[in-house]
Length: 261
Image (cartoon, rainbow, N blue to C red; front, side):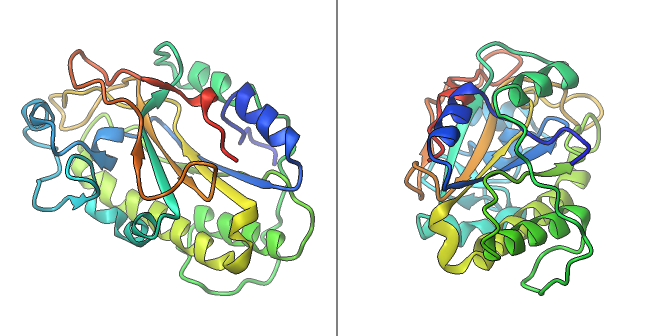
């Protein structure tokens, strides 16, 4: 790929290098995804106090464990979570807040070696429910590449548009729907090969805990990761919840410390 599309950190890179027969598929949500409206801490009363206009109503949240729940537009991922094929890590991020998009992306992408494979969109495609978007087409071609036993070790995908400084409630549902539809289709497309593939999703940082005057959220710190078929057993939300004090969700888990395999 000609654009930067790698992420994570040195620990993930070492784990990856030690197990070359595995395939890592990092997905970067570029722009700073709002972890609090993606995996909603509906059991924390402060969430609704800080976001009176943009919080996801408790009745609409897809409950996961009584405290956290998914945004309703992530419904395609709920069966994966229930089937223990999807794990979630909340309040995850860099050890210190970096609120510049470029600096945060550079930090996250620094650890993995440049082994990404370019996949031409000219290959014939099958239809398994991928969104008809650049993101969906990229995932479809990665699945085809893995299915062809081409020996790919690392292949990444981007989905941008997460920098919601205003009118977040209008922008987020469609983007999350594309994101969830793509991930679910990719996991289903792998069939019996899923055990050899780990999918992780990361954004450079999360958003502010409090909504702003424009109905959006400003840059924050801690975010949320989705992990499919990695070393983390699915069907659970991991991470120490720090509460919602201060202007940003504190990152209690360093993204570099996770063993993705």
